Image (tube, rainbow, N blue to C red; front, side, top):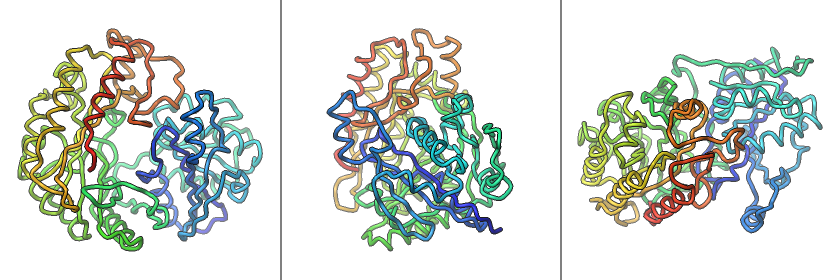
Length: 482
C-alpha cells in the first residue's frame, strides 16, 4: 500500500517525573512498526521539558506551563534524529499528528492540539493511549478548539492504519465532528515488534543489577481483577513468542550498537513470571539473546506456590530482580483490593515470597500503596512489611560485585476512571473517602517528582499530610542502588 500521508507520532512531555528518559513509551513504537509493515512511513517526536524550565518550576509556585518550555527530539523512521527547542513549524509538513497520551500528559496534549487546529487546519489530529481509553467521555466532550479529529480508545493498530490510509486522512470530516474509532484484536499473534531507534534508546537511563537495561512487555491486559487497576477490567492478551523473541533480539542488537558493555532487560508487565512452563520459555529467549541481567514481575502467591520451579529458570538465565505489587501489609486493605479474582490472599504470602526469592539469590522490587481509607493500624502494618523487605538479606551479588539489595516503593493510590475503586467512590461505597470533581488530569499520577504522588481526593480517613508523611518515611527505605 502506498499513501502520501505523512504521519507523526507524538509523545507528550512527562513534566511530573524527575527524569523523562527512563522508560520508552512503547505505544507509538508498536504503531510505527505496524504501519511500516503496511508500507506507511511515520516519524516520532518526543517532547520533554528542558532542565532550565524544570528548575524554574521547582522555585516558582506560580509557574505556568507552556509548549515553549519544551524540547523537541525528532526521530525519523530511518533513525536520523534532530533536537531543538519547541517550534510549531515542524508540524506543518505532516498530514496526521497522533498523540499517545497518559492522563498526566493530557494538559500538554490539549495545548498542542489547540495550536495545530488554529495554525494548521489541514492536519488530522488523533489521540490514543490510556487517557483516551479511561477518560473517553471527557475527551469526547472537549470544546471544539481542543477537540481531536479521531479518538482511538483501545488498540491503535487497525484504526491508525485506516486513518493513515486514503480512506480517512484526505477526506477530513468537514463538520469537524470527533470520530471514535474503537477496535480490539482478540489475539495479538500477528503484531510486529516495536521500533527501537538506537539514537533514541541511548538516551534512556535505567540500570538493573549493575547494567543498563531496556524495557518491554509480553502482554496487554491482566488475568487479575485488582480494584485499583484499569487492567482489572481487561482480558489478558499475550504477544506471540515469536514477536517477543524478535523484540529481545532487536534490543540486544541495540545494546551492541550503542556499545553498552553489558545488556539488561526489564519486562514491565505484571505477567512475566506466571508459571514454570511460561517462565522456562521466556528464560530461554532471554538466554538466547545474550542478556546479562533481567527483571520481570510476578505475584507473591505464585512465588509461594511454585518456589524453585519458577525461580530456578529465571535465576539460571541471569534473572536478578523480581518486581511484585505487594500493595499493602494490611490484611484489611488487601481484602478490599481483590488481588486474586475473589480468592483470599494473605499478607503472610508476601513475607514467604520475599524469603524464597532472596534465598534463591534474587532481589525483590516491592511496590506498595497508601489507600485513602487507611487508619493508623493499616499504615503501621504496611510499614512493618516494608521494613522487613528492605532489611531482608539477599544471597547474591550484581554484575558489579555489589550485594543485591531489595528495593521498596510507596505511592498513594489514584482511582483512575476504569477502575472498580473509581466506580465505588462515585457511588459512595468507600466510607470516609470522597474524590474531587472535575479533576485536573495533570494530578492523576502514581509516581512523580521526588517519589511523590498526585492527590485526587476531597475527603480521606486520615489527613493528606499524614499519608504523605508516611509515604516519605517509607521512601527513605529505598535501596541506594538496584
